[in-house]
Length: 332
Image (tube, rainbow, N blue to C red; front, side):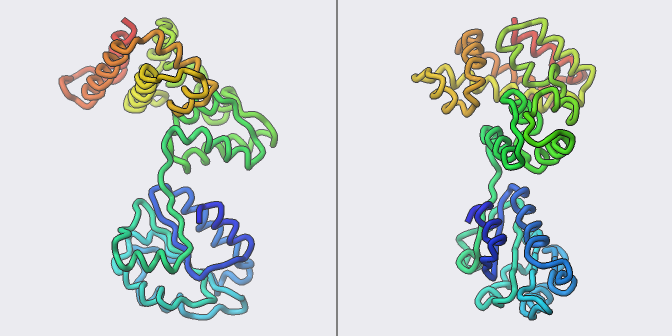
């Protein structure tokens, strides 16, 4: 099952004795664990029928004993094993998995990596459980995810505001939801989130950010580009060099890919570059201002300055000065 199906499975009380959620994206794993903690037992039943263990602390014998006991004054007991990847004797759970207790709902949360599916134990675990992989999303999947997340909460977001969040928060879903939480508690349901609201409640400037720097570079707007660069130089937390150069490399990589597209229709461009159709015109303009050879040159510059920021062939120049120098070379 996927994340939504497991949540629906729990809410419809269509239970299975064992659930196994795993992968690098902790957001879905934590949300499923939260549903198990809050959505199955009534409050009065939790004292005797809800057990939460951590893989780095619990002994396997204690865990299995807890799994096999019967619920008290309830139809089910809930047992949650968090951080299962840290459990030394994890594979000894096979003794329980061969014959799980029907009245126990057992959730295994396995974070940061996927288990080795070639192992006999993993095959048994997958066979005996409702399971869900939770991989990290690619950054080009984040705008659609933000739109869906906000849609479920009855909000909308402008494409430019969504791009601004994606540029600054990357693909960390927990971080994205935490920042959006600061915003949506302050606005009415049904509202449309704008760059102004993001600046007010999250603190990302709508004028001085990496997204606007891309626009300035794509348009070869020297004045605007250096206003932003000077702002970043004076306020390093607003535009950390390592994040800025990473975002710039992603931007020019898309321009590089644009030059190799055969179908230049807006829909095809958006699909091939993994961008919202709203921004296709920005990449068309960027490609017009940066022919293929110039784009290659810019990407080489970005690689060089990434190394310089890490001390290679650079003993004393700080990140702010490196950024100014790099942008000057890109524009000239």
